[in-house]
Length: 113
Image 1 (tube, rainbow, N blue to C red):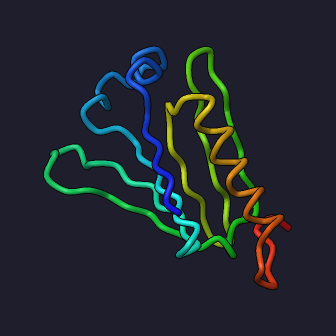
Image 2 (image 1 turned 30 degrees about the horizontal axis):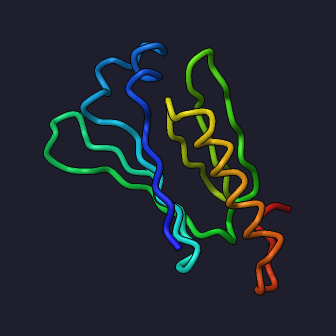
């Protein structure tokens, strides 16, 4: 199953990222492929920058809440993914999806160590 989340316009404006309204952060979680992809259109509005990682490399999920919206950082072995100005509920849902996958995973690896 694929889940998609995007930065909210209200959060972008409230947290000083007004220039990013045209280029919001997007997170796509694919539980079938076991990958997370964070993408953002580049500043020239021509291409899209993407970072992906497999579930097996995730070690920590950090949610930094603001008055309006929240940032999420997914730390992995050798790097991290960051998406800014998402809805608070979206960040909580992302963490919940990963935790549920970890509990019901039929593989021998855990997402969080």
